[in-house]
Every structure is written in structure tokens, then in C-alpha cells.
Image (cartoon, rainbow, N blue to C red; front, top):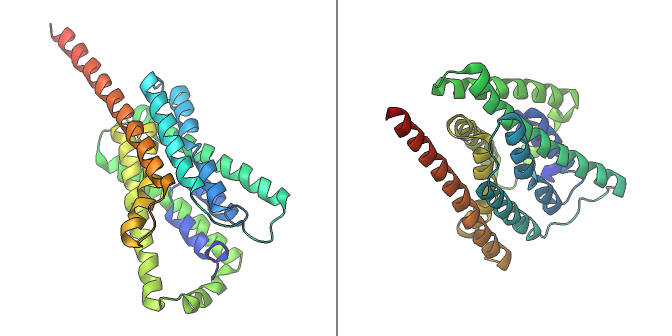
Length: 265
């Protein structure tokens, strides 16, 4: 069964704390190549850097620019290594709309991360991990309600039994796959929100982009995938990308220490 056209896309949306970006992304994968989709999603870091500057007053230093550049290039290299075929039956107009809305999804997701950081810093103003869980629970609850309504309103809930029957690994594996997806997605989402809370929205997105590079590497071990030149190049670009941002955080830490010492004196 074509997973792009199955009701799992509604279930996937319901697991995501970012409803609008998730809905755009999963539904317009119907009309995009996986490689084109990944390429467009690689723009998240650029959008996030802009929003971090405008909303969160984060200083865009040389090290930040270099980190965003190298990690974006690394993600794009991985995307270009994808040899998926175009979804069938889509016109050029629909394909173009898919590209535009996927780009919009990247923009909205980046904006959401910056607004979460703004909420933690300016509105909530309570430095407790309970706030991280509350942010995750409430956004996921809204996403789940809207996505379940969409699942039933579209009539795709009728396809769930057929999808389970056609799953090549059997019913048990189908259920375990959904449960595993739900648990891992929520753990990833909580981690992303926690990084916003502890560091910044840009750092959270940097780590999320890094996962695009780590995933193909994990496939080498789990699925005996091939180690291509593109994957090696992605690793080479990713290492300095992370190092530049870590160095930037190190410099920021030194400035805070010096400021504290000067106040103490």
C-alpha cells in the first residue's frame, strides 16, 4: 500500500505537536518527490535564524551563520542522495503548489519554535521542566483532536482495517509500528521543546536538522544500506556545522562568566 495515500498521514499528524506544519508536510508529500520535500525542508534553519533574530533578539554572529550554512548544505546533500521517483498522477501545477506549501510549512514550523522560546522567556517566566511538558501536552492535544476529526470527516477511517490487512509484516507488527512511532515521536518532540527551554529555538532546530543526517547513517546499520559519497559528504559538512554552534555557545558562556566576575568585583 502507498503510505503517502493511507490514513496513517492523519495519525502521523495527530502525533505531531506542530499541527499546521505537519498537515502541510504530510499531505503535500502526495505531490512531491521525497528528495524535493527534503530539500525544501532544509530551509527551516534559514527561516529559524531570521525569526530568532527578529522575535528572540538572538545575535546572529559569524559562527551562527557558518553553522546554519554547513548544516543546511549537509541536509541538502542527503536530500539529493534520495533516488525516489515522483508521485504519479500529479500535474506540474499541483507539484508547484506542493512545493510552495511545503515551504510554508517550513516557515510556520520555524516561527512556532521561535514563538515557543518567546513564550518561555517573556510570558511563562517559570524555569521548571513542568512547563516543557505542559507546552508539549497542550499542543499535542489540539493537534490530535483536529487530526482525528479530519480522519473521520474525510472517510479515510474506513481504510484502517484494509491497511492493517495489507501490511506485509502482519497485524502485530502494524500495531507495534504505530505504538513505536507514537512513543518515539513524542520523545523527540519533548526533547525539541526542552532544547528550546534550555538553550534556544535555533539550537533545537539545528539538532533536528542533524537528525536528517543521522537517519541515513542509522539505516547503514539497521537496513544494511549503502554508504554513498553523498552520505560521506553530509557527515563532513555536518561536523563543522555542529562545532561552529558549540563554539558560539562556548563564547557566549565566557561572556556571561566575565560579566558575572566584573559585577562581583
